[in-house]
Image (tube, rainbow, N blue to C red; front, side, top):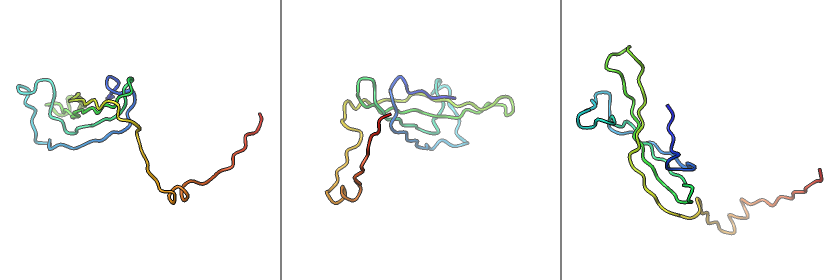
Length: 116
């Protein structure tokens, strides 16, 4: 099973997964929730759009087992839960360093280019 976030992100910069309280004894109430099973994990993706904005998207991930064991394999069910458009938020990372840090981590390098 493949999950694509292409409808929401041009690139994904960060992925985070959170385990929910769904357990092996949880039953899927198809009358109350006909389209999607209870999510075992919530996957959060963060990345940019083609317009240069940042979007956070939330996905429910579930493993659905057949009613008759041995009849077929379990399947993974992924559903889009919500998305938050953060707009243009600036640089991905901003680092502030003192002169002492700069002197320690920045090593001058002499690079010569040679003709090919």
